[in-house]
Image (tube, rainbow, N blue to C red; front, side, top):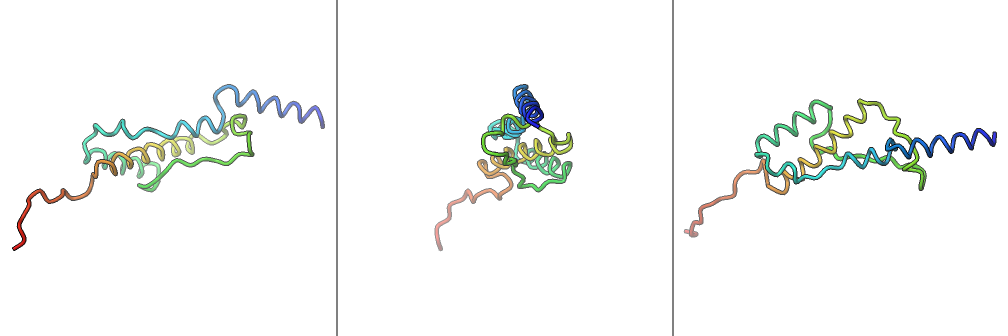
Length: 119
């Protein structure tokens, strides 16, 4: 039993050290919204909606993080399926797009540009 625990512990350490840990892969899903600021609003909205539809996600999707046992996050291997990893990556992209859309007020009607005197 003792050797089994030592073997398991060494496998977990090795799995976490090769860049395949769950926490490391989940951190990669968080993206900067600045990369989308140069994309025109209409195109960005269409891109976000298409990505949400492709992965069957909400248009308000945000990256999710698992809650491994305290301190073991870097040592737990990423055992999610490719489909789940792709959907999680897409949710990070959607979140970044939403932050750019919000910051630039995309999708909202233009503010009134004329100033009129009350009459």
